[in-house]
Image (cartoon, rainbow, N blue to C red; front, side, top):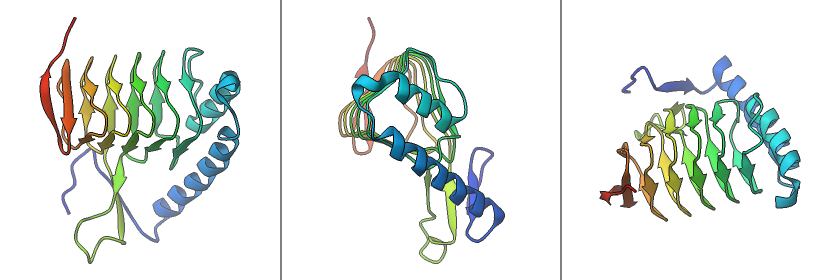
Length: 185
């Protein structure tokens, strides 16, 4: 199985796998409480999200529940970040969200998966980081796959599946997402 310095491979039945499962259980307990809140409970949402990721988020952070994650501790969030309702962040590979990012409803940011080979599929979890650079807008129902960087000022069109890096100042769309055009002021 290919493995570069950004890839985590966690075999089933190992101490790393047990730690991953414990973190998933912790995250599910926190998100269950977070998902009982409403848009009007922004301060409480920020407090629970801060607990989830293990570091305080800025007062400008806004998340509309419900929200789902597999861990939380591998998420980093900048200032003035907006996460709309029903988003899913599988963060085992690491998820870095810069300042001024907008994430639409039903967006899935998935850093982890399984090997393609049938004989290995249930034996490993494979995870690669995702980086969302400054001033990105990820529109509704988009999916971002592990190992991807979404470049500064870019837009991911609604319903897109991003499997490769997105250059800065680009509009991408489709499945798999491709550059539609450059954007700028």
